Length: 170
Length: 208
Image (tube, rainbow over all chains, first blue to last red; front, side):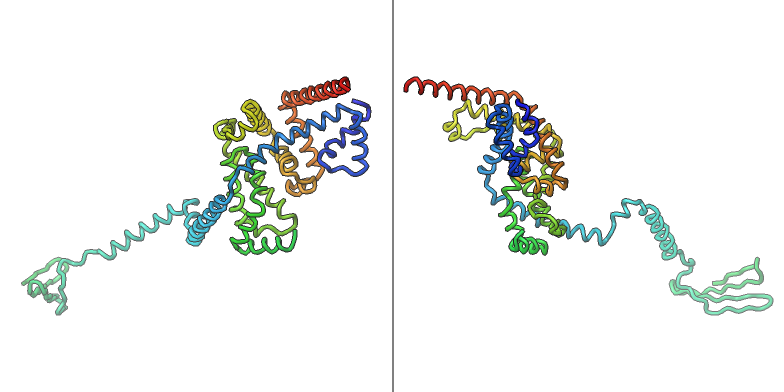
């Protein structure tokens, strides 16, 4: 290497990449004529470039691309379907429920409400189903209540004198 | 960016698949070159191409036209290819199964020994490229495979021209280091051919 090599080496790579100014090009080309070491350095860069580029060029030359476009079209279609499903999910917005675990108290509340409502709906009615009070009489000594049952056809007369004494006559 | 391309891009931004097909027709080979440069494996590179254009169709609305469209697309291709490579990990480690198959015409043309040497060198280059940091590998692919200028590279990589030059310099240095035996062989070959050339020239001189 000559003394000017260090100055040239700074722009040699730029020269190789064709990014030098006219002045720099003149400097490098003048130097390269007398410097085999810099010529070798330039040649090595060229070889590296060839080694990187040739396999890629060959791969492109061998490739048939139309079917790739078909796959892209299919991919876009699939994605559109997925995005429809995703938009539905986001509209329903169920995922945050699962993520934040707020569903535990929500489900517990629903269960309690269901339990209470079933208790109200299926509450046991008095044993005398379909009974209706026909008459009810109150006096200072005795109270009388007359029931009429539909099935079987029975009339119940309920007499009671005080809170402890009760008589039932059928 | 010419008006035809601007129009094509804005149609694509409105969801026109025909416009995407036009973009594909114009750029698919370049995207494939970048993808192949990174992953160095046919099937993977094709997957990258597919993924890039699907991504592009989805995200082209974000392209504001502040940079060249192709640098925007190249950056997308590079990032997707690097992601693929990372995900696949060691699957990319050298395999001669697919890439090592020779075409009969190729063998007849170059001879089996030369092809074998070439394949070996390709494998070495591939391994050496794999060892490079992502930014340096990207710089080498943009410049040495795709032939972008420093300015275009800076746009595609989102950095300054100085950074581009530094990445290229260190990338080349590392690559030369990894392949020094081959570089030396080539240099010896050059020396031998120069010596042969000189001998022949000398003989010619004597004959005269």
